[in-house]
Amino acid sequence: MVETECRTEVELRRDLVRFGRMLHRLGFMPGTSGNLSVRLDDHRLLVTPTGVSKFLLRSADMVLIDPHGRPLNGHRKVTSEVSMHLAVYRQRGDVKAIVHSHPPIATAFACAGRGLEEMLCQEAVMTLGVVPLANYATTGTEEVAASLAPFIPDHDAILMANHGAVSYGSTLLQAFQKMEVVEHLAQIALAAHQLGDPRVLKHEQVKQLRDAKTRYLQNAT
Ligand SMILES: [Zn+2]
Image: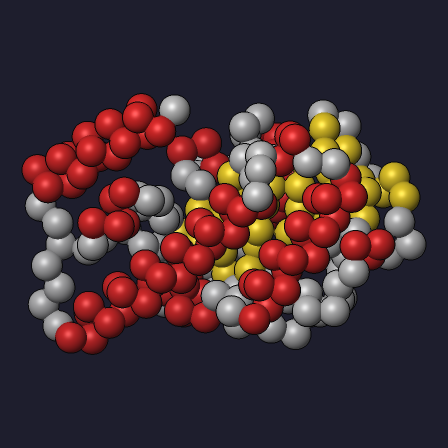
């Protein structure tokens, strides 16, 4: 998978189908839940339609909208949760793709009023850091965008109270992988607490890991 900006609209439609299927198979998008989007350019977004299983979704089903959520073409209605996507694109010029899903363990944390804030394993520090919990908001309303807004600038994944999670990146692959990691970290946190007496990483250990991450990112670029 190459960077989003190098991919044509046809390829991005196929990517939305492919990652939708993968998320469905993982159990993150049961029924018709969840949605995905990509930014084609400054004026156009491609978003999954409302009420369609991500297992059955086809390239032609995607809805083209402007940055205000108005449809530009497509025979289907855009996802009812589009305002969440618009809020992220508005605040983050670097974001080109978004995944919203209901991964079961991460969603259970969101239903228990808990973000993924403890640095229990090294991977948590090296990947997403803290995954905060946004306040409760009724799905499909502007409340959702407002609840996410404080966290969007400094986080690439956010839990949504009594609802699910949203993740984003410069490609759909990145957004997908972050959603995978959110669920993975939630499973580890749950198991560590079930085992009892979880050992949270010490401040100095977290600092060393952050330094290592910075060095790794510098080498990678
Ligand atoms: Zn949802």
